[in-house]
Image (cartoon, rainbow over all chains, first blue to last red; front, side):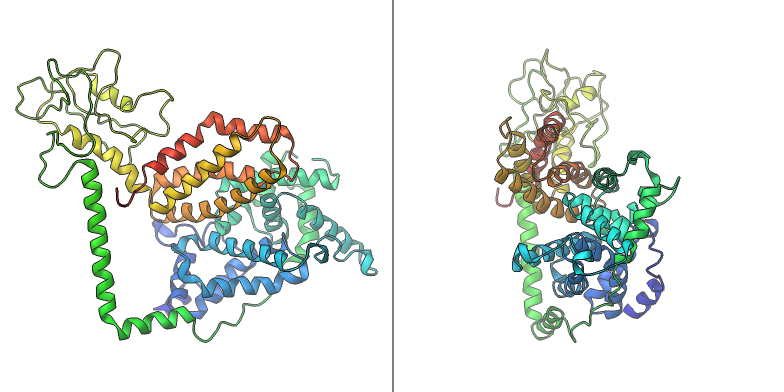
Length: 202
Length: 320
């Protein structure tokens, strides 16, 4: 059964993330793809885990990138998924997988900062001239990312998911569990603050 | 381009926002592409639990029996509280639970004046029974013959006030519309049965975990609202932001769970709570006083704290 389930939902690439699908209702109000995959993963289906990774890794990556140094993010993404796999029995509702996973990612980022003293964690000068010559575009990108990281928590996270991971507003809502209205507010207010920081008019 | 109406920022449609497009091009290089991690051979919990079940089927049976007993006790407890123990005749006032406290309805009657069949008095109109979802407009109404002058009609069902009821409206006042017609009823009434579903329906939609969450959120919002006018201390604000973030995470899980179960009332209240938690969590480290005041004003105006407390109060209470 888990094998046929996997075949039924497999085949979607990362490039096109279907909006409002993994966590929301499926056809005619039935269980969503994400819920089905979580159910399969509970039964030990590793391919379901891989598919869930494909669907949710960008969201987890964005949540972590908004909070921890870039060179730590990839390791922490894997850490978050392994934690989710180990603690899956604590998830009460399969449909809440995205929000639950985002919570694990945020907690992981908090733990990271607790273990490392603040002065050794540099979020702002990655890729800048202090480390030698780098392309102007890299500098500009680094400054933009640094500016986003200075924003309040929810704005920062939502903007990273939108501008870095390329997720749309509905996809962000679906993956993180926030309402679409909340995501829209975060995007708009966050973008407004970001424009002010970058000195760009509307 | 105005961000409020920026469709391109929202979902990439509409007129292209040059700045957003530029940032997408710049920042896309930071996307992750790490492969999925290798899973352990067997998930520890998944391996352990089935093994226990295979070796100890008696444990499973005992667990099922315990659950059945717990469900039965909970049901009995809630029925006892409602004053509706098995064998009770609908429409007859009993001695337990919450008494109907209609005031001044049937002339000459003292105490509760539930008009059941066979009383010989004019029957109130047979209003339709409220649906279990109908918490905000209880159309059924208790069936008393005459509304009291200046007072509210019907059964005083504590805790059943709709969160959207106008402040100052007495409990039960929502039901006045149905009872005002005065037309004779066609048959026997089940007044308590009509009033009870509205109360029980709220309780049924709010489980223990959600009720606790709403209580915690109400506490946070009330504390935030009542902070001194000249500003909160940095520690208090930091705590409020952190706590708000924690509650927001929990709110997301509970809302998704309610959504998956089709529990619209719970989903609704959790939806309405989310913007407040988000706004508090998103305050800067040194927010402008106007930003803090704006949130407090909204909390006050929308009476969100009262609503949350009512929902939390209507949640299940074990052992009562």
